[in-house]
Image (tube, rainbow, N blue to C red; front, side, top):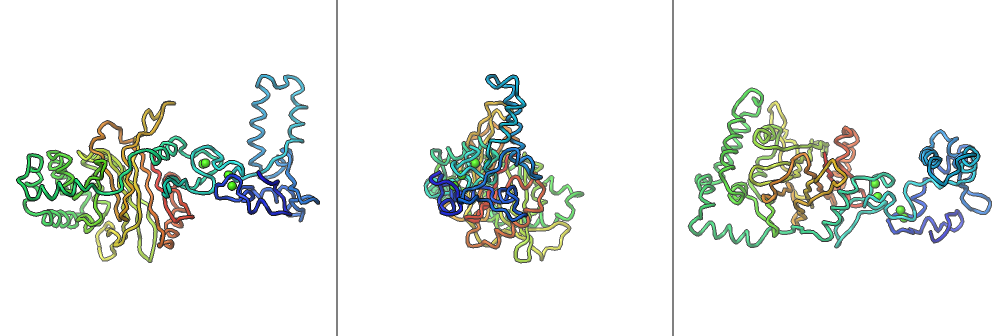
Length: 432
Ligand SMILES: [Ca+2]
Ligand SMILES: [Ca+2]
Ligand SMILES: [Ca+2]
Ligand SMILES: [Ca+2]
């Protein structure tokens, strides 16, 4: 550090030695220092010269709350078995260590921007080309998905990233609609003969009409099987065309903002349908906002012939619907979102690493962000890992509402979210 931590100059309150967004002093656990120096008895943390009074390990051990001493002692116990350490007289050596080693209690290391070496910075997001690619470290002294974040930061530094729908794809679709359709378009043409809107309308009607009987009716199975039958005879191109998806410059398929699925909204019955025909996981993050239940809904899995994919959508409850299950409408505005999919390879071995399946950081804000790589065929759906962001900038109250609701989520759900207050962004890190 440039200056010793002291009370007089206050330099540590204005200096950020490691440039991680936190002043040196903010990285120190002031509360513990105050407590260990007898804060309750009115003693100062500083001596007469204004220097910090650092506790010894033994003093920390005397504290009711002794997170630092516990760690230290474990290390010293191990040291006694390491060659070069005194084999005899260990007690005396140990006692000396306890009484002479001073401890600076910290939240994070003031001299290291990434205290725990997991790739996430102690006090700010990792920013590449003006874009936040990893959140502020939620636990600066505990490694969080180290290999995943390092792979992701590397991907965002030098990998292929989609930002726009492909112009060639738009041109191709226009041409396809005016020239005689080739073989791959034939099946889609058959499906779309009646016009896409009528297919959508009848699907919506069938699903909404029957969702109250979801457990007893076979209608869902037959809808699902028909959908699957239709989709498996299609090339990815046709399936994407049917779903109104477009490819980006890297050949990854994505939903569009203005699309027929927006009218359908979402409910749990749809997931039941998808469950019958694909291998997919879903997770829902419910929260109340503006007196209405909202849900951040996410999926990842094997999407028929569209390949490995993942999605995040934002919905709000449609209170006018009076079925036995709740129906959600798509939100009628858009937010900046990004989405990335990885495959954890050799997951249970020391060679574990993450392969990027796609990265999609569209310039256009989204209500439902999706990505599908139809070239990616060899994977186990259990090993898919989604990283996504939803920026609530301009809708900070919504961010706060989700953050507040998350405090009641079960740990296995909560661990998939990271809240970065600095830019009101929610990070989805969905590994298991
Ligand atoms: Ca710092
Ligand atoms: Ca630091
Ligand atoms: Ca870190
Ligand atoms: Ca960490």
